[in-house]
Length: 176
Image (cartoon, rainbow, N blue to C red):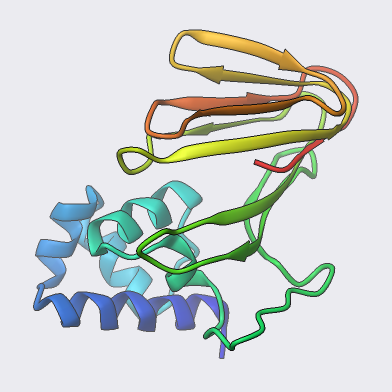
């Protein structure tokens, strides 16, 4: 089954479990009804921001919408994570591991190429982001604060605030 079709089925199932119409889902997620229909039909590849809006509206973690069903041992082999963001110069954001509610934890592998940035809308209240720079330098902006990190540096910040990652030099790789 295609990834977009599987996503559509999961969104539809979660919506129906709540007893919601497509209009109610669209309103709760802040997306158009047409977008909700296209996602459920598996005819569109939604952005990471749209996926986050849907998962938050449906009260489920993002992994529940995009990852295969869980087994007791959940192994993600190298190169098999879910790529949910692609940058204009070849960067990517890959969800490599996660846990289910109530305490959702996500492990991402981010690569930003020179000139790329990723801006994120605020996540659910009390969300925390943890980041560790593996190589290069990475500038992280949270609200009106910005900090530049080097290899080996780590950062913890409130994910329920607007934030962005920016690469202004050589290739940057981080694990937020």
